[in-house]
View 1 (cartoon, helix red, strand yellow):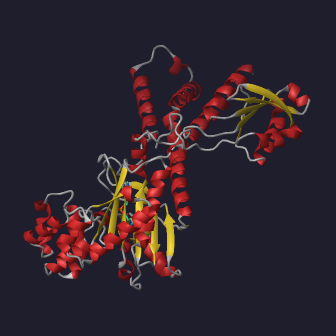
View 2 (view 1 turned 90 degrees about the horizontal axis):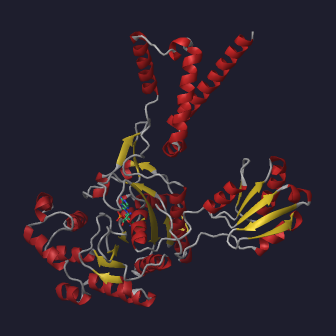
View 3 (view 1 turned 60 degrees about the vertical axis):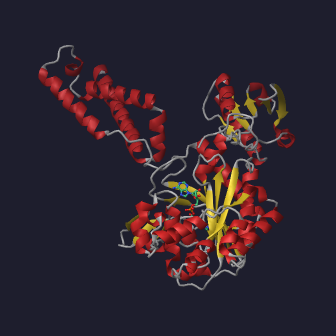
Amino acid sequence: MMHLLLGSRIQTISMMILFWTATVRSSLAFSTTARHVATTRTTKNTVRPFVATRLFASGGGGGGRVSSAVQDKDTLSKTDTTKQNKKKKVEKLDTQPPRGTRDFFPADMRLRTWLFDQWRSVAATYGFSEYDAPVLESESLYTRKAGEEVTQQLYNFKDKGDRRVALRPEMTPSLARMVLLAKPIMPIKWFSIPQCWRYERMTRGRRREHYQWNMDIWGITGVEAEAELLSAMVQFFKNVGLTSNDVGIKVNSRLVIGEVLSELGIPEEKFAATCVLVDKLEKVPIDAIQGELEELGLTKAVVEQLLETLTNNSIEALSDVLGKESKAVQQLQQLFDLCDAYGISDWILLDASVVRGLAYYTGVVFEAFDRKGELRAIAGGGRYDKLLETFGGDPTPAAGFGFGDAVIIELLKERNVLPTLLDKQNIDTVVFAMDSEYYNACLSVAGILREAGQKVDVVLEQRKSKWVFKHANRLGANYVAVVGSNEFENKEVSIKDMQQSKQETIKMDDLKEWVATTTTTEVASAKDDDGGDA
Ligand code: HAM
């Protein structure tokens, strides 16, 4: 009888463990969180299934045969096949995210949130309103024919309804679509922080997905819009601790190219495609795109003359080439005067070789760069007065910029100005019960502190004080609140100040007042420890 009971017990336990193993396995296969678990908890996850397999073998596999010291060949090969089958079933998950994309673990998320907060804060101080659009758009939004890289890097496919769609590689076409749709009263100043997808060749700071701060002004014809945008960008750099020694913004106008082309008798419709090709000349030798240039009717002589003009890096030099009446020169002069008025001249320089690779820019273009010259463009933008027309809308002036998250994080890391405490969670108080019988009282304490606005972590299981203090340190908590027998009896809580190593006892009724006397944690922006990582 006893034997039977024991046998069925073992079977039940085996079944439970089997169920547990299956649950762990299936959740590992399907959830992203589980991918992280698989990465960080390998030891736990490998030990337990091993125990479960052994129990299953002795319980369900015919007892003595498997545990016997002497096994015949047949048994051995059977065991091998079983092992192989098991291996096949639990094919190890590739824990890496798709190439060129990123996971954002909590520390990365804190850094990302911090960066977005900086962007949002500048946008708010410059009076911009936030908007958003779907990451999936109709592919036709991006099928421009000027040979831009961005349209060749599309993540595009047919959806189940046979529609051609694409993940947005940039936000500007979506913004134009939204303006066309809603016809907002002009002018508008809108900003967004979309995730953008480009099938890029990966280099430092270039990935297949990135977040891009977009700031755009619509409805303003003059370069006052560009100056406001440049000032906002500089404000951001200053706010995060960068100076004009770290970062510069090269400014040019595509009108320069326009004027050279019209002087040489090249028709206007070749303007956009020529700009895209000239931009490529920065990266590839002229011979590599000779064919494309010829297709546009651009002879080597024309291109050489164009490039010659684009080497000018002062308004005076440009004026000598294009003449005093040049619209490009006048426009750039006005922009530089406005930058002076904004107090940002230190950051701005003329560089006639800056063209930017997007076809739709029509006037001023600009590009923020790292003065050491080690990184790719930090941000880029310009005027695009004709984009709405290409979607069938009325001519509407517009200018804006896109500012990626990847290069700026690289730069902040390198200049050692990354914000601090981002590796900690900024918990105000860790609350714990010395014994499970005080757990409910500990929840009341947590409730009062949370209502009063503190960030509180409750220790959810029975732990020793030593563990709790270590845990509080890891979280960067300022206080540990303890409910033990004395505290419970006197309706009190003991609170240890982690920084000053002092302890006080507070009546539960006075907890709210106590919170008012404390300073809550904030994500710091001044550098004083090792910072986070993206
Ligand atoms: P864009 O020059 O293609 O412009 O990109 C703007 C910025 O986005 C770049 O300077 C860089 O910071 C970031 N970026 C672009 N591609 C990547 C990538 N693969 N990995 C990491 N960062 C990247 C535009 O997208 C325009 N739509 C910007 C704009 C807004 N123009 C007017 N309004």
